Image (cartoon, rainbow, N blue to C red; front, top):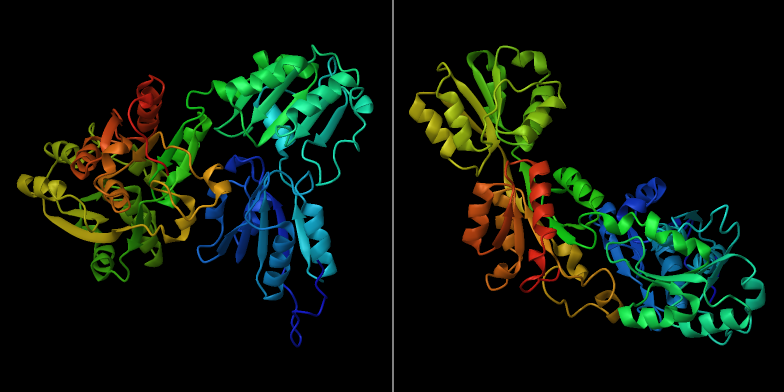
Length: 536
């Protein structure tokens, strides 16, 4: 298929650029910086079977996301249709990112797409990715090279072009290379192993088959060349899979770091706002979890805010400034700066933070919390103020926050100026209808149901009562008891339980580190295997 250079070209019109981006082996953290940059300005994203759906969050909210996955003989779009789609979207003036698993030019058919773009007069750029060949082997504890075991690598595909067959492969030459890495090596595994042995490969050569390498779904079958096929069948491994043959496989027992992490293989939902999810998600990923970020709430600043403007013009009248969330800190300081003031305007105030997260937010502006309770809840702040001198209090916070703090301070005799800074809204998940959040989405293709999209969720994390309320908006009452939840503290736990969620873990202190510890303790004690699971 070829499209003439001027077929889509109007008077003076030029096509937009197409980026062929390597998405890496599946771990979102292995996307390159350049890949993230171009995704951030894509108007159309055409993504495949092996590209993590979490990467789609990097695209602008209004970008069109088109699934074009191919797995074995199951094709959502044929290659020619994908080629035409890229060309047509570019000639419409749309900046296109073609998001491809691994590296576009390593058995990814990226060269075919690039040639088609060239023939159609469409400018393109290839953004290299971390090849699944390198990543999967490394995550399985198998270095592809070692000075004493293998100084050459043979990389080949186990899924030849239709009609080509394996007659084109010189197995006698391959067995002389040292280490062999065969991508898409499962479907013809028996034939590949037999041909290698028939060409002179020692049947006792160490070999491994790696399923979904470098992801939380990784499974590895290890054995000798002559027995590997039976081991793969015993373990029930499926595609995508990488076959590695060579003495380097023997190093797996010592170098297998990936699967030894505490939360390896677990799938955890993070419901914080996207701006706040980073630290929690990073901590869980460091422990080996697959993190699904779905903010259940959004923060809407209440601008313009005449009450806040008046307070900023009269800061001298206050004795105390209380913050109950990082969001409150960030929005207050934004308003302070927009009023042509800075932190010096707060020098006479005693600043209280409800907990370490809020205190940390203050620290980003060079401010230190003078007061912080032992219990990181409103009641803890009230207890703290029992021994403090009376004086006017400025309390900028969420519009729908609990009244415990205001009532408690008022009962102690404090004068309070309560200023709603923001409101918490239910997040919009409409842009992710094809990602199967709850139960089974019948619109998914067969490929999607066997890829990233239909894995059971082991645990959901809730960091506030509002995240629990937001999550409940997308899960019916009948399904909420199926969702195991880890809560950041008693207030969140109470809200989640009242909504019908099953709270199985609670942080000992209302901090991200404590929440991660509670998640880890629960998921490593075996309790997670009991009871039904809800798919996200």
